[in-house]
Length: 310
Image 1 (tube, helix red, strand yellow):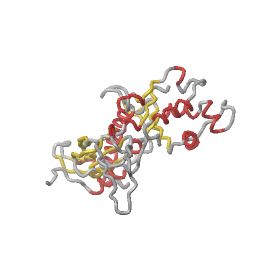
Image 2 (cartoon, rainbow, N blue to C red; image 1 turned 45 degrees about the vertical axis):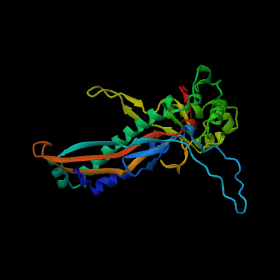
Image 3 (tube, helix red, strand yellow; image 1 turned 90 degrees about the vertical axis):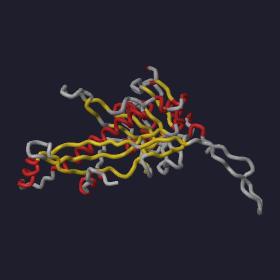
Image 4 (tube, rainbow, N blue to C red; image 1 turned 90 degrees about the horizontal axis):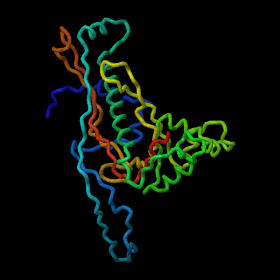
């Protein structure tokens, strides 16, 4: 079926290549491709992947025992996320006359994709930092005695206990910048990583990762404007002051592999443009960019949520 809105190769390339180091959604819930808008993924809540059958030894002419996986597949579908912006023809003509190379369509496509990705960051943060995304036994709201800004708390014991409680031990720790600053400067963390009294110093990410035997520390730095349209800008952190411990399997797909979560994506991000007579007095160019994705938590037992660490 021919789509009414034309995809432009150079704008699509911009949409595909766009990255922002401050955004971490792609690290927390990595992309996995799906073949169609509607798809199925395994529900690992009651999965038999950990059940080892008896009698696996097979004689010279014997047959191996048959295993039947009884997990149910859940149905889901990708959603379209896209934005558009109009460029008046007067701006296009001014760019053509400029001595400095300007491509208004490319610049607009990049800005649109920036907002599309920020929207994905917000959705991912809300999903990953929702206590209901975790098994009931794998979420803990911290009291004053356990918070990271309390120098007498014990984050080493707290985090290790959480990692040990997970069905599959966490490979990544996810938090915002404020939580990370407090964790890396906590006396017990400083003492354990820098081998000093803990009174001064800051641990780096690799040192903390090694301390807890996880592969990575992922720190969200993104902010967004929470003010209503027309009001003064009011910036807030995308990621709250919590710590999510997650088991990430980089090879997991909607067909196999156990991972706390991932993002189903159909195709690649896209960008396009077309003439629109209703833009400005002389018409203009309608530029659009977007992607088809669905963020999913598929193994709640493979995560642990430490809520309100500050």
